[in-house]
Amino acid sequence: MKVKVLFLITAVFFTCLQHSFAQAKRDVNIVFIGNSITYGAGLDPVTEAPPAIAVNYLKQQGNIGDVAFANQGHSGYTTVDFLPSTHGVFKDVEQAARAFANKHALLIFSIKLGTNDSAIEGPRGAPVFPEVYYQNLKAIADSLLKEFPGCIVIFQHPIWYSPNTYNGAKYLAEGLQRLQDYIPQIDQLVADYATAYPKRVFVGDTKAFDYFKKHSLTDLRPENGHAGTFYLHPNKQGAAALGTFWGEAINKVVKKVAK
Image (cartoon, rainbow, N blue to C red; front, top):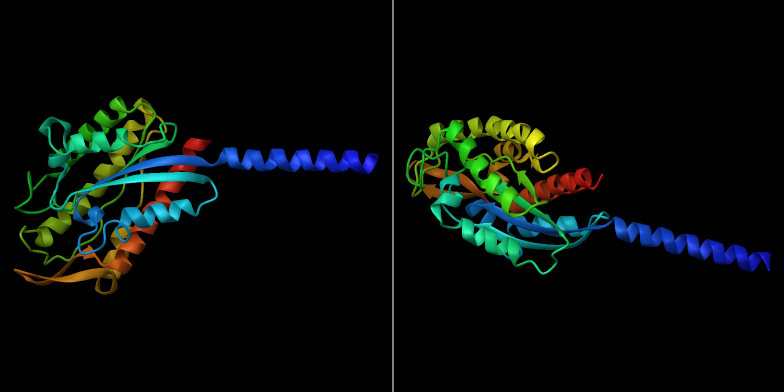
């Protein structure tokens, strides 16, 4: 009789433990906001773009449940294009966030903008100077935080491009320097949100810039431009690396907000 009781107690314990682990998993909905790098230019955007890689990474993590995502990467777009006041693509971001079937999942906006902002000329609003870049990101985040209570905003650091980048838009060394000047603006913006929106706005990946600077020949696609062969867009291998960086950063945030 005692053996049966002990067996029953043990079975109940492990059932409760399994239920506890299941409950600990967090379902997430992610809207990826960005430019051609986020979209997956030159790749299959459904399976090879960085957002798809990031989501696959998250699905393999023990603390993550179901994951749904929307890729709102648009080639050539800047923070100016995504401003709520422009009445443009921001509406698509809103619609994507509302379209998720699981309304109880944690809603995350992963934002990687800056490449096109940094150009000398070409993209809308370029060049976007660092202090304006800060204000644009803040306007986007303010609207998302207000419209979607409880959502999380993650700013991913931009990635390196070669200083001779010059396609339909003109970037060159001046643009690359401006892109690097955006990074402290992102960090400062997140710090400034800490009081008004605690545990709602985070810095995401910080590794990719240096990674692509070091691995440009293997992880970025060579493209012909007005100043020679340049490196801007990740190839399949680079997109896998970038997506993994994003996935790791997003998961760290999910763990922080779960505490």
